[in-house]
Length: 167
Figure 1 (spheres, one colour):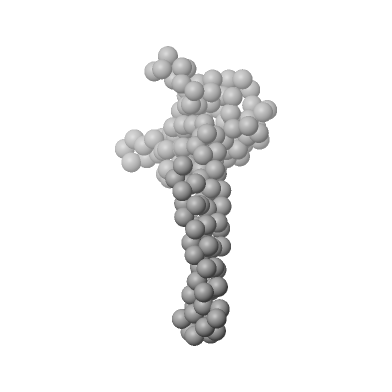
Figure 2 (tube, helix red, strand yellow):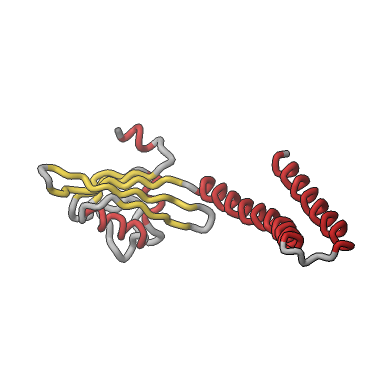
């Protein structure tokens, strides 16, 4: 187990019910806190990162806990699960996974979706407005051709935008 855990990039901690560290790999120790000892015997609130401390506390209360720990260049997902024996919580297992890349992709996806939505809504709003005016008979006969041309132009922009997205 130790050989496996030491070669993981994810941090692994096993704690008892009194916050004593039964096992921790180097990746986990590196994330505990700036003031933490290199290989602490237990977690202490004053030196442990708040997110990890709170996740362990909730797991000791019997709740599976997930949270994010944001560092300067990385984002870690902290997963804390209670360990039970005979129906009693006897400890916690904590897994710390680097999700920086996943979070960056999710941010790009949200930004892309927001931009595409905006770019699609703009011509659709114009088309809808022109069509509504025509439907309600609020456009003079002489202006119908102009409005139809505007609708055609906006539709061409939508088609070009969709083609760009597909490429």
